[in-house]
Length: 312
Ligand code: NAP
Image 1 (cartoon, helix red, strand yellow):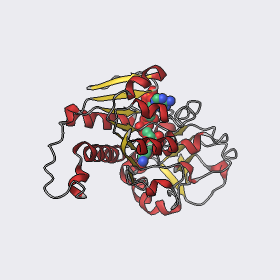
Image 2: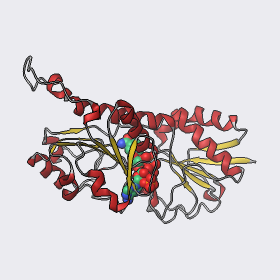
Image 3: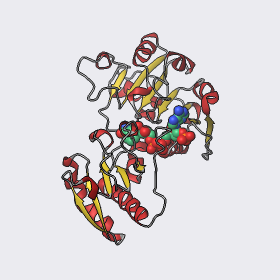
Image 4: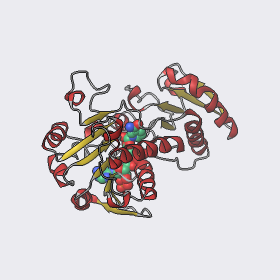
């Protein structure tokens, strides 16, 4: 039987996926027809998407066995009521590695106070004291899924005491794991570096508001490679102005690209990175897509299924 796959992700991605996807499917013995044009909906078995790149009525795709997302985030898909087929998000080793590197790099930048030397803000031969050791810097990770758990473990390996917070209880070696609303205040309390890696859902919108920021250690740093909607932007700016936060490194925003007149650009204590923390890589992502097609064809459970009611 031939698996009919519609590659509905942006066409610009197709040249990168064409070869790796065909090879990954062939390795699993799957005969596939892959189309990049919008096909006859009734003749589609699998739809490959890239989060919000396709906002359309999927109801006519009556025979679709799965929708396979190239992105980890799927907030733009979960709200689409016409997606009634199983939806899988992307978890793949290169995406995870990229996020681990981004988080470790930006945590170390702030932990070591690198800006003082790189930007020269401390003046020539400032005589500034050696920074504390990682073991003396409290880090909290909001979200302990595929990315948050991996980043937390990397920080533990560097010596940071890491507290993690998730919706349901987690058990991750070396990480102090808290969960649920009850654990939230405790997870934030006294954190010197706060990293966000939770999805954008109705429950996480504006999670980091004035009250949350007030729980952090004075002069804390916020690093957000998750989604912009997790942060109350006005509360963030106020916390920077008051010194409660000393810096925020932000990779994601409510509106992307971040508009030219957005106040974040004018705030020197905000570092903007243009949603580059972690990219899905075609070679490794194609293996995940092909594996899920193989599983669906065999009637086996899909990897990385999204719980539509939960929103991630
Ligand atoms: P994931 O595996 O689904 O993990 C999500 C984590 O967040 C889980 O630990 C989950 O708790 C927790 N969580 C969800 N809702 C929560 C709530 N209401 N309260 C407390 N914790 C909650 O997701 P992932 O693959 O790690 O990705 C995380 C996010 O990173 C994505 O959704 C995406 O937005 C973002 N991302 C950004 C980039 C970038 O380049 N900037 C790249 C990839 C992904 P449970 O453990 O209990 O489920």
